[in-house]
Length: 410
Image (cartoon, rainbow, N blue to C red; front, side, top):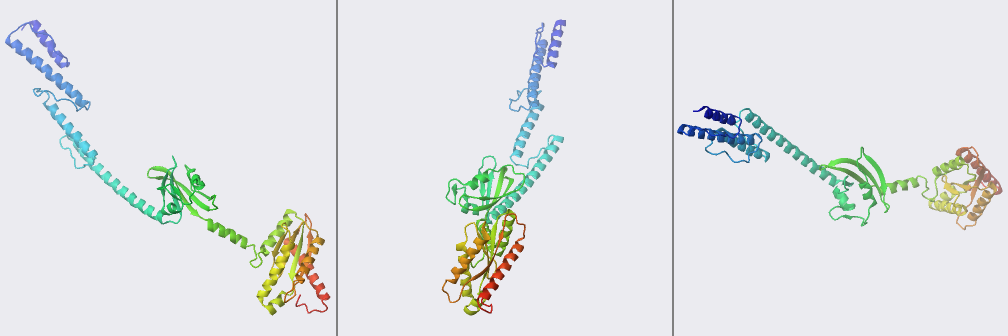
């Protein structure tokens, strides 16, 4: 072999080491030189193909053709390729939920892989169990909400979509299935109010009165409903309750027999007039002879007597005046901005009107009048005592006029 051929061969070996194509030809054309040249060329081809294959494997590219079957250098690489392909398939099976997959040909990696699969199976079972518990709880919660008389309405915050209504709400308020309101209205102010709330930091409570004179008590809370930010509203129809409360409030200050205000209302009104500086005449009125009428004719007739007196008082009272039944046979009239003399004249007319009524028993009233000027600083009790004293003075004078009457009828 010449020195030049040796240099060519050395350069070819260097290119093989550097993973470069071989180049150059030997001068000698002996059989040995030719065989050596072919061997070097074949070695270069195998190494370059193996290196390219190895590069793809290192980059995770498994969708590549295999090295030539005559490539003696690629045997182990093909085995590695087959192992990686199988591992990829096994990983895909694990992703699909096949936790029976195990790896036993990659040393420490096999142990880590197998432990990972065991932990994934355990975690998934725990999540399934937790999800089943949540489903059972949600079914119980839905069942409980459907049994409530109150309306439960869940609204998505982002777009106002109705996510849930319980059975009571579907029947009496709004059915998402049909999109119809139970009241038959097209626009519902209550629903618009419910949809207006978002990002509630704490429980919200309020009352809402709709255009149909219905009153609702609403409690609203923010929560996650099936992974969606929502507001749940608990709506109670309190219309009857509020009407009943209003009725009881009225009845607390009304006399059932006459329909007039009662003693409690009378004391409150007198105090209000004094505090506001309203001038008025207070008339303390006592029905004459009610006890005798109850004893002789019965309490039903006594009630009729009381009604006659109350109607007569209402007839002479203006809208701005105040009349109440203060006790069993006592009444009070507050004549707004009315002088004492004029108030006494009105009382005298009422007394005469009652006396003229033809009944099985006589009817009349005794009264005492006191004028309370603007700015007077007196308690309601003091004013009543003064009027009461004048009323009894009137009663005593009438007794004297009645020529020795025993007083029982007065």
